Length: 217
Image 1 (tube, helix red, strand yellow):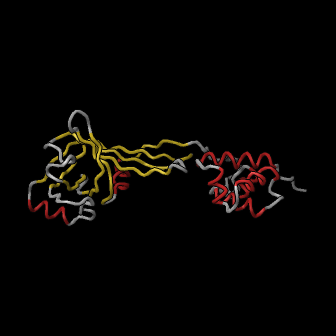
Image 2 (cartoon, helix red, strand yellow; image 1 turned 90 degrees about the vertical axis):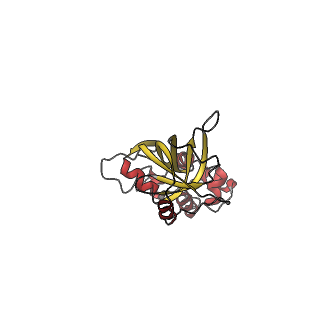
Image 3 (cartoon, one colour; image 1 turned 30 degrees about the horizontal axis):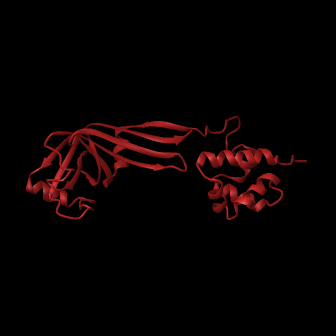
């Protein structure tokens, strides 16, 4: 005869998983298609009260119902412990960083403007392991020739505690060759999102490329 599931242990695992994902009680109830009051009742009474509802809770938590039921992954190899739910910080190789940067996107450029550095969002393109973007010659994002510069792109999922970040450190140079400007204009993502005249091309040549990924073990 199989043992009856322990409602207290199941409720504890559900709350722990909910906290790991950064979900409120109301958000979990909404994702599981039930009211918060009914969710609380289920956690008190156990899965025998409404088994399909607990399956919906497991789905809303991004896990399998047998895992919540027993506290163990059903597909884990024999003798292997469950994965550590705590976030891990992993260092990326330079090749991985450039792969995440892709060919174009939106990032943040950091420049030493005025009494303090400024960080500005720009849409960019990747050209031969450098970052290029367009701006106004008199705009804040137009650095002096050879100015130190940083560039960062990231993607963060707050609810799942997952994400990555890539940081480039180097120098900013103004592109003043008409043929080079024409070639850069044909790159994917080259058209500035912001309105107005932005004829100046800026190239950030990195001397250091680092990246980190946050995940779970």
